[in-house]
Image 1: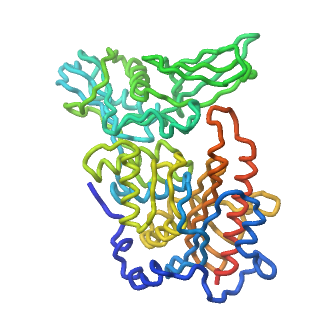
Image 2: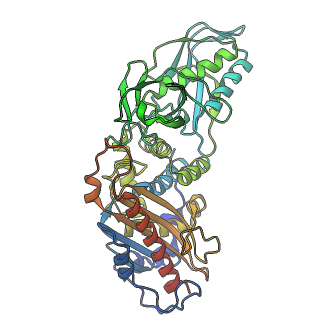
Image 3: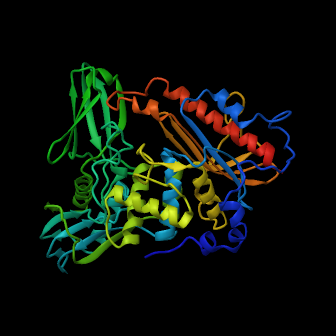
Length: 496
């Protein structure tokens, strides 16, 4: 099932009319004089190089800004060089998924009966079959169990099995990340609660009570698939081992304090979903006998089907909250539909890169995942800004991007700021990116991409160390301040 965003993106007469100016040898800086809107700078706005120098950022600063109507490149700096894009990658993933799957695509999670249902008895296995839904949560599994009962099933003679083979299993998104971070979970065709488990602790005298549960809005069932032990040490804070049938975690007692909670990644996502569903089936009077997970797609009748929200809504939340698992799942699903087969994460990212180069003209695009978590990914500011101009007329990306609040001189949110920005942010330690659309006070709309990256300092980070690397917070703060100052400069010069 392959769909295009719009023929206007790829064959639009308006773009082709200015193709010579847009894509071949356009000037790096517009020579057109522009009056300045009031309230941004008094006198002449600072030059881009002066702003970059004042930001005191080591590493690379590259950018490109273009007029969305004409495709004219207004300013650029190092715009053809590849830089780690961080989560700005998710904007490309959104375009890829919309193009291949379509805005109305819905992920489906099914309960499949491998035999007939007679007098309320399923004479066969019951299979919980994932369809790559990134939004499946505990509440949805509870509803599926209730729906199964409503279908008249009250007993399963066979085994209860799970299948996650709709997408490839990946133990982690990026192996360079710390083991315990919730934004780097496992990937599967069957996922629950973004493949995170809720760990909570409370002190009682000199001892602690701990719990691990699969909480969502309405329910919080305890699980055994992830287990926590308290260790009498100062560091490391967390350790992980594969316990065979469970994730075995330990936490340093000295790091706990009186009480607290955090989300930890799940490394056995299919078993996690199976355990939680079995709890709700039992609450409906349906006792399930666990069986081995299936490797091949199950055959039988889907007695219950849970469908996600439309892809457009899934992507809007992905871009707003920058969820890595969602990005990987929608990217993998799009690649499977595009190729007609499942591809591993790295191969899927390569396929998305090829698509970006051929369909969006993003020369040099080289991505290692769909989320931007891997620091080996490379995009250029010029190629991304060009793609943003190219898709602007289709009207699918901009409405699902996040409104970015600009700051006042004291660092607070300036809700009355005359410049409006709708964009995707990207942040890793010593990497900060921002790309999207800005509207000047007079209504002029520009597409832009700004990449800041100090790859040398990133290479010095010890991924096993707890906490933020020294200097990372101030570096990223200065990068964000620079991004706003560049945007304000462009609004002043070109907003007429």
